[in-house]
Image (cartoon, rainbow, N blue to C red; front, side, top):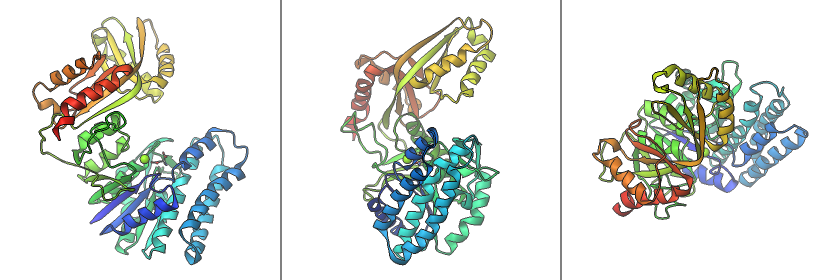
Length: 451
Ligand code: ASP
Ligand code: MG
């Protein structure tokens, strides 16, 4: 039995938190592979370092080093500390090199912002050792996690990662060693780090689980798992004990910040169940995500909302008959890496849902489209996407009618709908001013009274 356990930034954010994590790892049976994020606050610090002129590299190194050494001193001393210092100093030297490297190198940022994980993993490995367990900290490059794609936005090469991990990580398990692997990045063919995007350690852990054929992936975070709604909006939101992969993927993508949306795919591919657990309250059951087939009586499992979005509507005569034109528009938007949350078309319009912050850049890009093909572009700011999730939602007769009935009762106008694209979610757009009422109405009617 192999369990891959991932601990997020707050879970490794202090000496106390690290001790809690060490206990959780120690109390887990079978082979364990651990993946960690940087200590909370560290990645943000590093991002600000790469985004501003580097006036005081020594100060940066000092601040970074102090934080980790102080934590270490609160955790262990004596021989453990001596051994820790040896590895720490080597890693700090590597950090200094990365920091002082050529800032014009397209991989510079990734090399610097991925440093935090190298130190949190070291801390955890030594806490475990101090408790008498066998543990080593290994970097993504040494573990064989191969990344492809652009800097800041990489993906794992699952096949080659599996080969690398089989050679480099499996032998450790057979010796009873617990490897602590850096999350957040892999390395490309030239050994340069490529990060998986902010919050990407969850994805790293799923990649590791896939590569090593784990029996279970546990994502340890600071909440009790998925909820039926955001508890800040719905105080009596319910915990969700079980979900299938599709539901979790939609929810993670469209609202709930419990899990990085890309975490699902690598484990789904190999049917590896995933558990979301709270490292501050390990006794909580959390949410189990797997190939749940059993249909439940409730119509909805959860209602999430993604706020601060805009609809950009492009009008052009008979655009529906000119698919090449639509393709060109999408290409243009894709070129600037803007995420399109939803698309809908009619005979003479195509509408895109993007984040408020991406509107200006998108409009600039669309203005570059050649010819007089576009008649008009309209923007509607400040809308929210509601994502109603339930397994086999669309198989149940009349569900959308009931859902939109509830939306109408909340006095909201539906601005855009995407139905049928996924069989576990019904997504639609309402004005920001109505979002809380809509979530409440749906929750009250379809979830609240039922459990
Ligand atoms: N430390 C990285 C970040 O803050 C990755 C992660 O936490 O998942 O984005
Ligand atoms: Mg996270």
